Length: 39
Image (cartoon, rainbow, N blue to C red; front, side, top):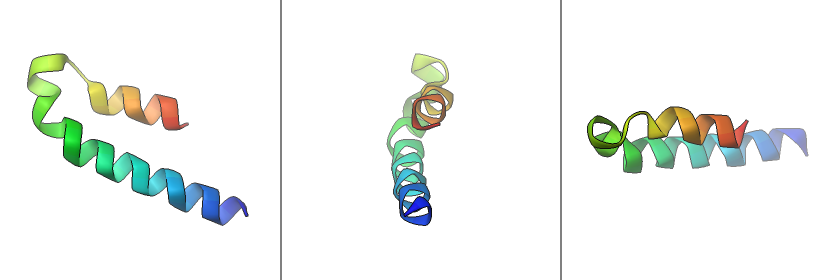
């Protein structure tokens, strides 16, 4: 169960990095925010 949840958040974080990465220069540090929310 714990492994599944961690894997799910891992995917979410990876997608967030891919999606928000290009916007990081324009919107500050959205990747860090996504990581904080996921954590």
